[in-house]
Image (cartoon, rainbow, N blue to C red; front, side):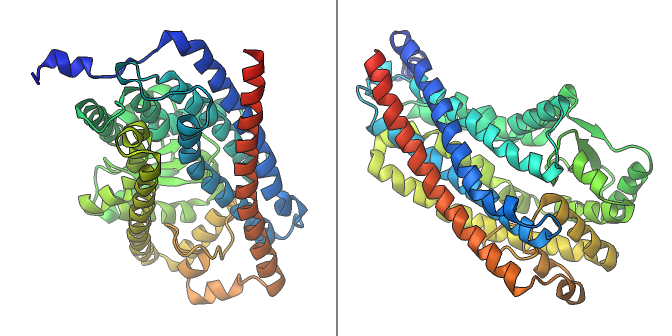
Length: 423
């Protein structure tokens, strides 16, 4: 077989099969509506213990909130293979593999509809954390921050449209281009876009002096600190020695606590390049899932499940490594001012609605009780009643995952019947 640039380009699948574009648009709306209903039912079910907890009992409310947030994340991850499986196996009349006419609008628009519903569902947690709905400006910048730094949103859908239906040259080319774009976004391109959108801005005033102090302590003269104009509660150490802190979190911390937070993130900025690579690997691994059509076309739907299992195994190993790096960052930052660091951790968990004990031993961050000094940890230990309530909230969250999948699949089945009748 002759190998030339022309034959290589022609081997890419047709991006739009106009004959089925209208039906694909209906599929996108179908997944948007069905997923939104499923998310609504599941999150309401999982958040019931949160709303029922006394307003002055932070540990119980935080335990219920955290359990629901974990349940939401599990639903998100499980949904990806569920969407792929439904489109490839259960939709009547849908034949995903047709050589050069491989029909991608179904995939792209279905994932777009589901993804928008997932974003909207996740917004309820930010509203509960802040105690109010985000302003339009906060909502826009929160969306921009997610789109730029989340490869599933910014790169996943284009990759889904570009990969072939086999593990061939076009597929590996598309994946390589997506990986390079992801690295560019992580290094400089993403930062430039966020500045262009006005989503991030440098710290100013007294806190700019704090940022310079922390940079000098860490021996990182090029370290820069930026505030994210969104309602989230998080801080990030990004490649290029840039630290992002959400404005909502910044207002929840006093100057001593803010200094302690920056010292923790500066410790991450001091890490060797290979540690940073491992720590930022999970988002990049999501791109492999977006190449699902190629794996399914080459291996079959059943064997694709082994790819999912391998993904989960590697993700667990990466999480364990990231957890060790978090402990090292804790040790570095605490050495400067132990009381201030303990105070910062407690303020951070309160703002993020995370209980002192989550019983999630495989997460990236250790529990608050494990990060505080023993004396401080003993003062915030929850009582037996709160511990029992939090266990019940976790059990309810896992039931919520089952409820979400059941509602999602039932909704798709019913809507597919209705669409067939209308057609």
